[in-house]
Length: 202
Image (cartoon, rainbow, N blue to C red):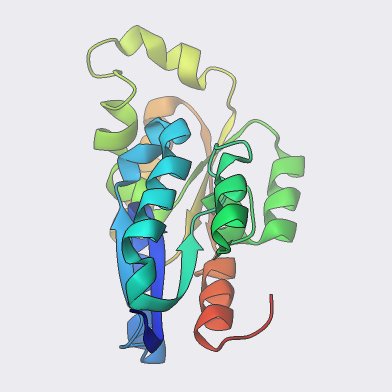
């Protein structure tokens, strides 16, 4: 049976560090978090079923559940699941949009449509999730196929960290892309979680 007032966030594992930082910042010690593997982004058709399974698994123990995912390539499948389950999620198409906010992301994309975006998480895990995940360590000739149409790399930073900035610049250099830095903070992730925890209307 769900305990009164217990709240759960079912989150993409790529947001675990950011959500932990927000819990600490706001003292949301009662807010519990269940993370799904970030590798699901390589198979977005698996995100909606995984989220549904997590909701069903936890529903009886929590009064309220919120999903910390954008659409993330599910092309509406995640929203269909959440409508059936009666659960809200972060608004947006992907994490680049909700970190930057819809307006800022639109401005960046309009200024240079051929932009490749990174977040703090992707900078930290670029080798594993992107380079090796796309097989570029085994087939370097594929780099031009994956990145040949990009002209600029935009690092959307949640925290201003010198090591991460250097790493992002190195990635841009490896890919042969112009580099731009934009400090976003937690953007709409922060606002969405504040609304959920404080039980504000969406």
